[in-house]
Amino acid sequence: MAVWLLGLPVVAVGGILARLAIRHGRRGGYVLAGVSVVVLAAAVALLAVVAGPAGVSSAATAATAATATGSNSAALIGAAIAVTGSTIGAGIAVAYVGAAALAVMSERPEQFGRSMVIVGLAEGIAIYGLIIGIILIGKA
Image (cartoon, rainbow, N blue to C red; front, side):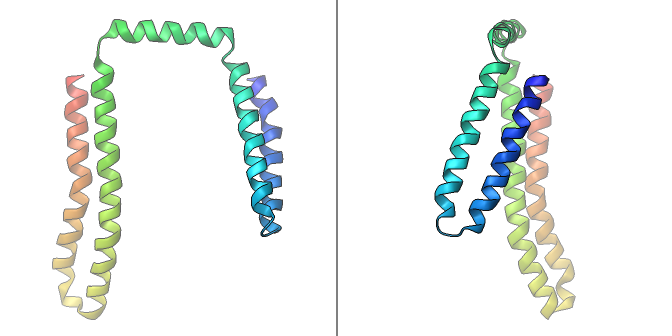
């Protein structure tokens, strides 16, 4: 836990330098890129310290535990991909369909019912992905 507290000043300094780089306009891009490299190097160093010899042995233990439990991880990853993909797709669909529905309803308020049906169909995409995710988790 103490190692994470040592990394907080690096993040704070990186944020301050990034804010200053944005204020400088055109030259700020180079400074911002330099700050990004420094913060990345600090994060990698922090990760190396945290995951030292004890982290490697715990990773090996986790790997042996995963092989002992079987291949349930593939079903869980598939469920995560199904839910994630469907919700992102539904969000994009609702964004476009909702905007069009609002435009239609502003001109012709009597079209409210038809517009909401189309928006509901777009939201159904997320429900389909959730159902697939539940089925996959049930088989895991």
